[in-house]
Length: 163
Image 1: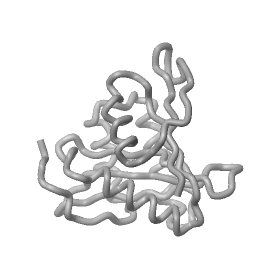
Image 2 (image 1 turned 90 degrees about the vertical axis):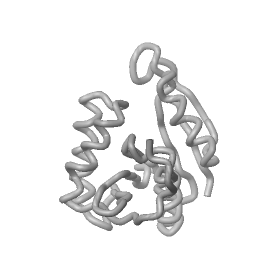
Image 3 (image 1 turned 120 degrees about the vertical axis):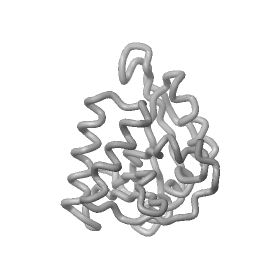
Image 4 (image 1 turned 135 degrees about the vertical axis):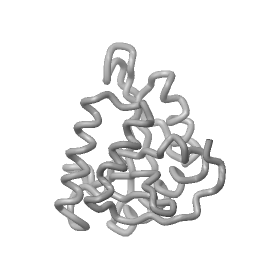
């Protein structure tokens, strides 16, 4: 398990990062095949639109390796609300501050775009308990839960952070 603190950089995702990002999503073993397809579509849309697009896609890099990904964007039909759509860290790099660094990076970028509220959705299943604890440590507050949203017995848990 990776234990040293994350010290490398975060940069805007590039086309050549695509395989690494999709690979790390698969290695987390948290996402169903349909979710991985959507991640690829969102990634491609973010790359195509660039810095002015609705999806902003950034990677955490350590040496020559992509070890994390965050994707956010403005929530449609709102003023100043943004969603963090995707946040993932390669399993070999977890618990070293990569996720924390990606969230802080996204928060600052969202503030700079006039953001006032960040929303994160995650699963209520037992295997997502570490994800929920992570968001709570990052000072996101649980604002709601929708029973059986993702599947029977798999609730949607909604977290927010006011900037």
